[in-house]
Image (tube, rainbow, N blue to C red):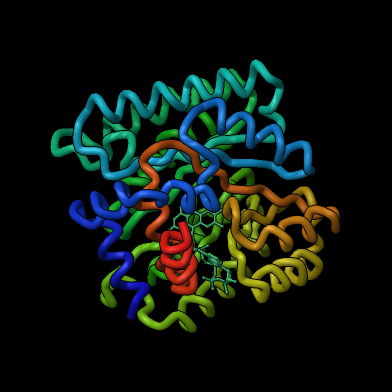
Length: 308
Ligand code: FDA
């Protein structure tokens, strides 16, 4: 019950104000977010790369409703990619984009605005020698996001996408995208979705993840296994063996600050492990989704506030 409440709160302006201005909150958010600035992002990337991890960087922000903010997000990503190239980190780091941060929900031409900004970021990524993955947001955005993906791939065939096993449509989307050169990050899904489009029970989301993973690992694309669930990690390894995949034909991904010892174990075992690294001041929505995924985090959050 707490999880869905937190997901609803993640979109509430009044709860956002309350949580964002609570003294000491940012200190606790540091467990999941590396900092606010480009320097923080580049510094964290350098550290993780030095420890043998690959990185995907996410500039926090979503549900942008004015065009200026969308343009600022694009400029931040372009600067980030230039900085990563300058310091020689683009062989270890790529970026993840939320199209809603690039204007997808703007009332006039949101899809086109987000596409144009994403295209500019992909151009910068190509110049820097790295890749881009499009995050997936709630189910109302999936058609538009996959549409943008198709248009970007015409110029940048290396653009990756995220698919969420929570959605009923995703097995078919996996079959569609399991093609040569296609980078697909499979996640369970972090949004509250209606039963008309999504599996209601967590066990069904997990089973759907298993089916989707089989499709992706059996296919010709590049699966990105994004889960902290030990069962999914074990299954991915078994499927890689069954389909005779070499260790550079797929990768594991986990979020910054979550199951770090498992991240270390996989990297030490010679697997490719990419850490999803969020940075920026607009941490509220991301942070609330992390609380919702694991209600024990709420206890940690409250205890940390009280003890300060
Ligand atoms: P599950 O939720 O079953 O967790 C398995 C175990 O992992 C838990 O028992 C716990 O030990 C640990 N764990 C999981 N979440 C935790 C947390 N917040 N704090 C502490 N421990 C935790 N979603 C989306 O909708 N769109 C997207 O674009 C992305 N992008 C993305 C990128 C990457 C790299 C990852 C790893 C995840 C995403 N997600 C996402 C989030 C994803 O949909 C999902 O909500 C979380 O990964 C949690 O699901 P798990 O597969 O980890 O399993």
